[in-house]
Image 1 (cartoon, rainbow, N blue to C red):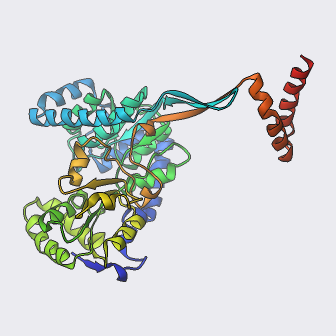
Image 2: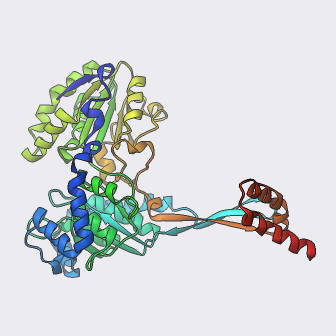
Image 3: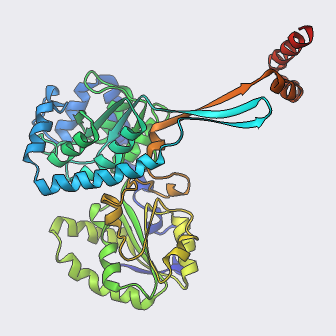
Length: 434
């Protein structure tokens, strides 16, 4: 695992670039997949599904059946099902609290009202990663806010396992969300299918969900064809710690997002060289306790897109974090709420030793689908607002019109929009004639 001095890091360092920012190398391959799906529909979807995920699925088996959902619920371990229900309840409670007034007005002046009407998006597609991993928690994080927002048509695309099945916990989670339209399709072909529509997979107005670099690349290519939602690519996390942090806690938490995959990013940022050394010493022992395939992920991440950064002060650490804008930020310092006030750019901020990233990923209640690749500077976590849209409303009475008319007419004529001004003149004339 690499250890850096913050003052020696340059803008070209790999750890600042992150995997998602290198997706240019796969854009050409993704464009080929997207064009094939656009032109050939289900045939292309099935071809790529058989090639990349499962070679036993037929075209008629792309859609998950109701009997498959029922069977999945029946075979799921009771403890897992209860854990899904508990997490779902917390997630639902949080997102129900986000729901805004569906219609509101404010009085701008006597006789002048302005407001908004909030309505759900009619149809959305949710992308849930799978195939090589199990992500029923992502299903809950996407499906619940969409449902709470009132989206009428919700579909899900998720890659099948090699035997052509979907993780039973994922199907149970979808059922908890009230979602039945699920398709065994992953990768760029799934994003293209939802963007253009095929005979089997409906076209949607918006696609929301995280994924690999291929998913991020597909969204970039399809921007403008469909609303691709927030940029949510390979996982990334920063653990901010000072000398008060327990090395064992900091070491274990550093590996949480690193085990997702070799393209993840995981950093410990600290002003304590003693803590940095203690964490380095503990990492190998933790890695020995996890399965070999997860261990490989962690080792790759810590040598490429991760490691430890030693800053000269907490303030310098905070500046680095706000520039990096991580997906997940965990604060392990003596006064975490004081530091919290200074963090401006992070997808989520987890405060204190009893709030590890894993708690946020599953069951605190706030959403764990977060912007990556530095986009936390401008994007927020998935919420009910991702599934809602706002229509501005204006209402002006006759007396209110009198107050606005001169201003509107003057500005319209200055900008040389003659019919804009004429519409005002006509109403003025009607009022004077009346």
